[in-house]
Image (tube, rainbow, N blue to C red):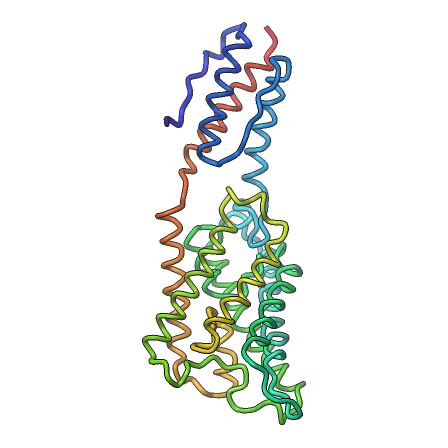
Length: 326
């Protein structure tokens, strides 16, 4: 289907209502196929209002912010002010610190209780992610994860400079949050390897790397679905959904690799415990998984933004002609 519709010359003083309705219907069919939206035709007297409403809907879809990111106009190089850098830096730093502080608190092996199964830590991390997104999602997007930030840079939702600020904040925040937890917890609970991500003894390094890559790829595919403009009207419960998605992935993959999906989350316990064994798995796996996830979504599910923009321009032209006085 073509992405263009012929519009009568602007200097025509009179345009029949039937002609306008045909043009609007054609634009509606094209836009519906691209964005899967609906457009209800009304009487000729309200045709102009329908065009205006559809044009406004297009503009609102483009400007609407998702919980995961700010609008593009605020995140390109031209919008990166000093205050914007600092605000996002602090948001990611505090968010990742809370992730490690509260999430790892749920992993604490209490001396007077038997060790909890991996289901409790998995659910703890998922619910903590939900909490953090609710607090910081509208500020920086609450990435909390270098793999997520890398994906936003790949999709040009963040500038490379802002992406570097995010990643720096995530590593610092994770280290600070875990260090604070170690200070405040009873020392008999802080056993060696506490809250560290390590491959299972029966899992080879390559198997663990493959699993970390795949589960991170799944995580990024979820993020891509959230960022997609076609999903902009389904964001109300995204923090809850995302928290339970994290918990679900951690429950199934946790016993094998620790289900990190997050280099900063694995780095903090390693650097504070001085144990860097198998750390390369948690650096390489999430990075490769993020790149693969972005590539898969772009190739399989992306739509042509240029066609959508062309249709919006034509909608504006038709709207002006409909409302123009003879």
